[in-house]
Structure formats: structure tokens, C-alpha cells
Image (tube, rainbow, N blue to C red; front, top):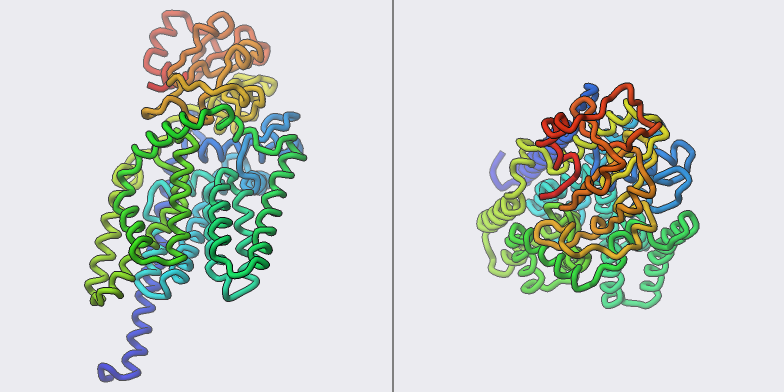
Amino acid sequence: MKVGTKEYKVRLIKAFRIILNFLYGLIIFGFIFWAGFFILKSSIVSFDKHRYFCLSEESMVSMRYATNLVKGNGLVFNKGEYVEGFSGLIPALFMAVPQKFLSKVKSVLFMQIISALFCLAIAFLSAKIATLVLGKKEPFVLLAFFSAFCYFPLDLINIMNTNYCLFTFTIYLAIYFFFKHEKSLKANILFSLFLGLTFWMEIEFFTIILVFLFYMFFTRSGWKKYLQEISIVLLVIFGRLLFSRIYYGDWIPNIIVARYYGLPLYTAIKNGMVFVYSNLLSLLPLLIIASACVIFFYGRKYILLFLLFLTSLLYAIVSGGDSGYFIKNICPFIPLLFILTLGFFKDLGKKYRLRKWQLDILIHAAFVISIFMLNKNYIKEALLRETIISYEDNTRNVRRAVAINEIMTMDAKLGLTWIGVLPYYSERYTIDFLGRTDRRIARLMPDISGKYGFKGMNSIPGYNKIDMDYSLLKLKPDFATLGWGRHDFRKMAKDHYIPIIYKLTLLYVKKESPNILWDKIKPLSSFAHHQQTLKMQAVCLDLKP
């Protein structure tokens, strides 16, 4: 077979496709292998020698709602209390499915496995979007596929936070069908439907919907088509709001009220800028190249992808920052920046007639540098050499839940700042000190004194409202966490609560509570309390340095 013949070219194409499929398979296998070990490493073995799996705090709250739904109590956090303490309706409903057939522990594991599979679907959609934006050329499509796995915070949040995982999947479907709308009426309808459904997945990303509506206003060729699309989107959004109004009595979920009600815009922007600035350096290489793509190689699709990322970044600023160590709002849109980076080099090569090997060197060098900068603060966690930052909190709350299950009756009430893992595994009535499931606390004015600040911010939305006179002294939970931020509530509670240690787990419980099995435990003497809790009290109390 001679070089240059038709048969030679056919065989060469077949060999190339085999190699390409092998690379896709290698990436998929590598991610599945990594995800399995990540899920295992993030799990907790408590003192009862059982293994417990945990999602993020807000996803565990949704799991609690789903538990009550399966039990016939309704989609509620506490039985009989219709307060919407979650922001993603479809994820909360979806979580009820495994709990119908599996145990509590296995239900959480099921959600993590399903989320990992959704990560694969997101990667395929990223490649499809790259094909529509850049054309079906390699290595562009392969690198777009790979980009969905190469940012550790995105992998982390997709596996641990069901809301964000399903939102990312849905918004990528919306983007895909949006870019296909010119070829298919069906794609046009599906785009509008999926865009509206993002509001059901995570209500805080409503700004992304506004970007699409704004973009469509200037790019759609006819009013009839635009009105058709916007009608479907608004109808789906209204359905979500109507559900909240009918079922919970409020148009807006209580968790959104708890986060943003009463927060001054200036304070929010100031804290948001501090939060974003501390995380922005790692984004610079990717952000600079993506910006250059939009500026120097103007294109409608480029502009839309960049606007989606930019809007999520601005929302992170305006909303007042977050308590995490990365900007979770932008995580779903990082692969879109990679697509813009590929677009920059594709158009650069075309404009200056670069040879293929020259273009490949530039693309892969930019990818390697961008991936390193994006993940340089998370390398140990990504390589599974260290546990994720929430592991200690989850471990503490799992141990508390196991202890409570052994020494407290089902009538016991819990007073907590962390309302995810512990209420889910203990199934006791829970008083939310921070107001996400308490309308009264949610409508308090936020504390912006710095008492509940973090990483240079003087206040964090969702974690800055607390009234212990009401939540602790009036409602009188049988177990309470007596610290939050830099505030220690032990002096306030000293006449009503005592410390106990049960199987190396420190708990503060109400004196002489009939819901505590006192024969299984003994209150600590002052000396024993001093000796045994000196090193662990800050951790137990949820105090922050």
C-alpha cells in the first residue's frame, strides 16, 4: 500500500479514530477511577464502625426534605413546618427516589454515584458545544471533553452538591440546543424548556436566564420567535414560583430570604470583591485568553459563552461572597472558558496561517498552564493526599448523630448551626439557629460587625443571622451547638446546659432533659471537663479562629 493512495488515507483515518476513541475511553476510565476513590475518601467511619457518606451541607438539607417526603410528611424539614429551606426543587424531589428503596447511607452513596455519571454527561455536552462553536476538529473536541474534568472544584461540587450538578447538566443542554436552534424547531423548544428548568435546579442562577433573554433580544431575527421562546421560559419559571407560593406560602424560598434579606448592597459588594479577589489569581491565564478571544475574534457564540461566565462572577460579587475556599458560582462555566481558549488558538492559527504542529504546541501549553494555575491550591486534595475541607465538619456531625441516636429518644430536639448531616442521620426535630428553615430568624437584620466574618469578609450571607435568646433559651433544644463564628454561647447557656462526653464525642445537652437516656452517660465534673475538652472544645462548638 503506497503512501498518498485512497486506501492509505482510509486506513489512516481509521487508525486515528481508534486512537481518539482510546483517549476518550482513557479519560472516562480515569475519571470513574478517581471519582470512586474520592467518594470513598470523603466517607466517614464513626465509632459504631459503620461507614457514612456525606454530600455538601445544602444537599444534605435537601436529603432531609426528601426523607420526610418519603415518610409521608410532605416536602418539609421538620414535620408539620412548611418552610422552604432549599433552593433546588427538582434535586430535592430526585433525592426521594433512592430513599424509597435504599437505606439512608446507601441513598447518599447513590446520589454521589449518579452525580459522577452526570459529570460524564456534562463532559459529552461540553464536547458537543465545542463542536457547534469551533467545528468538528481535533484536538478541540477532545480537549473540550477533557476540560470538564480538569478543574478540581468543579469535580468536587458536582459530586458533593446535587443542585449544582443538575444545574450544570441542564444549562449545558440549554446551551447546546440554543446553538442548534437555527437548524431545528424542536431544538428551539427544548432550549427554552431546559433554560427554564435551570430555575428548578438552582434558583440562585436566575441571572444566567437573564443573560440569555438579553442576548436573544439583540440576536433573534424575528419577534415571533423571540416571544415564543421567552413565553416558554417564563412559564416554566412561574411554575416554580407558583409551587413555592401554594405549598410553602411564600413566593421566594426561605433560604434565599435568610441569605439576602436586609443585607446592604454596599456591604455585599465589598465582601464579594474581597472573596473573589482572594480566588481570582488562579483564573487569570484562562480568563485573559478567553477575553482575548472575544475581543480579537468577535463572534456571537464567543460573546454568549463569555457573558455566562462573567455574569456568574459578577453575581458572586454582588451576592456578598461565600464561606467556601473557591468561587462555586463560576464552577459550571469553567469548561466554557476552555472552549473560548480553544477558539482563540483556532482563529489565531487561521489568521496567521500557523502550521498544525505549531498550533498544537500553543494549545497544549496554554492548557497545561491554565490547568496548573486553576488547581494549584487544590493539588493535594485533587490527588487524594488530603481530605476535602468539609471532611472535619462532616466527621464531627456524623459522630454527633450516631451518639444522639444512642443516648436520646426520638422526641429529642436539636439546636444546630449545621443542619445537613446531623439532622439527616439522626432524624430528630431540628431548630435552625441560622434561619434557613426558620422564617423568624431569616427576617432578622444580618450581623455585619465581623463577628461572623471569614477570610477578610465582615459578613457571609446565610451565616450572619442568629438570635440565641429565642433559638436556645426560648425553644430549649435538648442538644445544642454553643458557638458560631467567633461567638461563644456557653456563658449564656451555663444555667441550662451541661457538657457530656459519649464515646469521645463532646455534646452540650439540656439539664435533666427527659429525652436523654441519662443511665448511659454521666455529666462531666469541672476537672474532667477541663482536661478532656481543652483541645476539642473549639471544634465541638463550631467556633472559627
